[in-house]
Image (cartoon, rainbow, N blue to C red; front, side, top):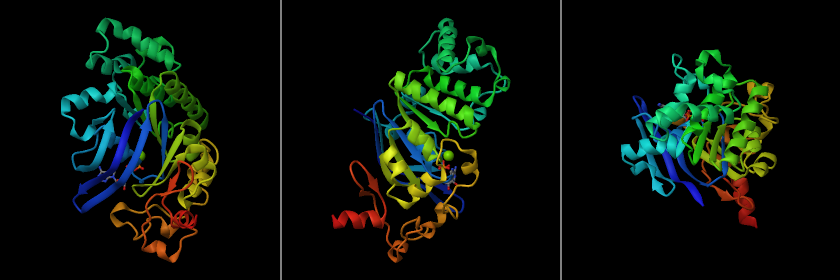
Length: 324
Ligand code: ADP
Ligand code: MG
């Protein structure tokens, strides 16, 4: 069953100097219990897309297209309904847990808060549920008494995951949940997320610049470039046999999960992603593309079928498809 459906979703920030087309025409769907990875370098529109799903964007952002969560139109929801949907139907784990936690409140109170706000636990039962949630993320119950600064980065991220689980959502969106952590801790937190979503039958959207991380956790992968999805398909196929030259470069840049060396210097990816306010003509990737043709500077290719349940937006893919 389809839990989430994005139909031609675009997000444009209106700023003083003009419009920033941060997400452009993204269509994706996610089945109940499935995990979708969204990959792409910094600035490709991943966080903007994630925030659009729960309407967490600033007021200067305009969202076009359609977002259906459990068949309900998120963009048409009234505020009351939207508040109920956040946490209880879908919750987000942000990058860098330190920003998500209040430094002067004990973590137990913070984990309990969304449950109390949504009336999913009575104050006298909340402590028990917090202990249970801490157990699920591999932390002892006494940690409820701790303040964020008393925890390591990995522990803080576990607390964020416990908060995301608290209201038993159908969907968790994890935006670079392990990027700020060192490699060992990163692997532990990834394993935890993988186990929890499988155990509780939660759908997952996981965002990362690191394709190897996503291929490890998610069944499906969408690769974004300059606000667009340029490739989509089963994650191992996309990771090991990418059809789009950008996905290929990303896969080569992050060969093993969380490799710190490649995080600093992505191999095979020269240049920088474009500024969305000044996108190159034609295919946005053509100035960095090792196999660009002359036509790529004027021709913007849409997603084409690229094998079984796969799509990619590249002239070479289109040429192969048209020849077959
Ligand atoms: P990612 O998460 O992939 O790094 P983001 O979604 O954060 O990408 O950003 C996509 C683009 O939107 C970037 O060019 C970024 O500068 C721009 N952007 C993000 N937030 C805002 C904002 N509040 N106002 C204007 N532009 C923004
Ligand atoms: Mg981001």
